[in-house]
Image (cartoon, rainbow, N blue to C red; front, side):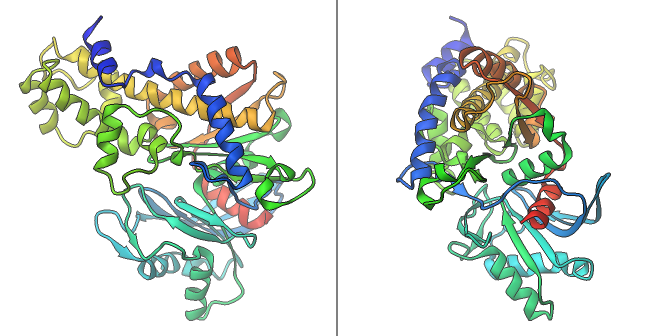
Length: 419
């Protein structure tokens, strides 16, 4: 038994312990409970959003993400779309807590210059919120290490509309959605819809989440009928059905929201560096690496997703002893593989839920965005390998992973224009 396998096995962190096809069946059952409105870890939030073709239209957009806050004007034409007046700032609440009113005032400031061009606003709010039939968002919680005080229970769109009206801006329609629905809508608006049976939205970056269209009559808790489809935000980061390892539990206990977001804490980029740091410290105590190696790695700067991606490739390790390099490299790779296995299970469960992907000529298109899927040199190839093995091989379904860049802004605009 080699050192890395021994260490991972002893601490219940072996990627191989997570079988995506088996976990997908368990996650599917939880998704169905969420659609019925039963108490479970997957809220399966109806977005009330529909997809469609856009020939023309214009909307101001806000993207309140886990790291950045962006605003812009997005205009669709028959030839695609263009983004103008793009502004990018640090998300309020990072490093220093802000009040809800401060956040809304900040959001209003960002789009005031755009109000002369459009009466539609797409607000991408990348945190847990229940979407109302009016397509507003009632905040459940703000997390990802962002702190906005007094946010729980607030209506995102109504709060912004009231602030704009206080400033003399009236008659604006605001549609609220989360980043994952925006990725789906943005990707679908940029791709050839005839090539795919349906679309799934995936975010694998600072946070983790997925969404997909579900037939209305299957959303039991809404009491709807008919075969129209509504995009469902799974809030899959909240899922608690995959067994946590020892380091997951340590990270969870020291987080701002202990006891929740188990799936996200096992998979998201914002947490992988912390998990690796914890593993290195314990690995040192157990004699797997030297104290000099641990000190050198810790003194090099913050250990984040980009750092461990480089370590996974064997880079930036020249200053530590040669005998310790394989351990650092392999535990870094293991974290990416374990994250990809969890996401593969998530995607497989969504395909089983929708019943789509049986035709190889029209596969399911997974529109994916986020730092892991777009920037990591380990995560995407591993996820695609797992999808082929477990979704294609074990389940006999067909899906393609389609990383899409900057889809959040056109997706938010599409939501505002179509709905």
